[in-house]
Length: 320
Image (cartoon, rainbow, N blue to C red):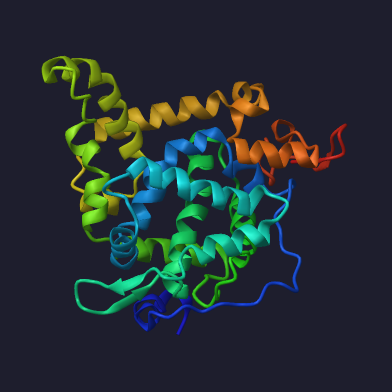
């Protein structure tokens, strides 16, 4: 059985599967493409793609519904989830943070609608959650930052293996090549279902952002119109077609053209983004990593690897 076929059978084991990483020095570094692109502030444009694709798989969505406060504190949950994963990539103690993220999930288990069990640390389910982060780096970079070469996409996937290894969970369901990862991703997207969690989390994209209680509804409809237009074009535009259908999100060729124009404009502005101060261009956990290593990410990895010469910058870092 290949990793592409393993999900349906493996996930029903509903058992955690740990691996020992204490004897291995695992870390991503400032020369990696994941470091360059994961903590870029433009990654925020992919928040709905990341959280949404995760929660279109029933077992993961049920775990969120059963064990989190998503319905009572949606934004708070996001703020608590993101930083530990960022620190797994950017901190000087990645294995400690990776284990901490894993251990958050030790008691997340239960049953889904057909009565079968799930466990968050089952390798098939845990890898799917990780895969959504890998996809976010690939998709957001290629769409809003700059086009990635095939070589760079494969390199990001290879780096993601180290990233996953930092959690200390079995990699038995992990694809072995970037091409396999793309097939795995497409196959997982075809498994999407309209879970209660994802329908709740995308309600603002169907109905518009709810206004404050003190503001009359007619006024809010006018005030919020530009915001809702942005969300319903740019944010929905980031979602896989399978998720758009499952979540009943309107889409059209006209909106696709608008999204494509916005994405092309963002890529064209990349040289200007790279002139921004580090603390504006990156989220704070990434900034801490860059400052600790003494590397300026604005000067590296700005050209696809299959077209650019490799050399040294004045600060000793590698360029591509």
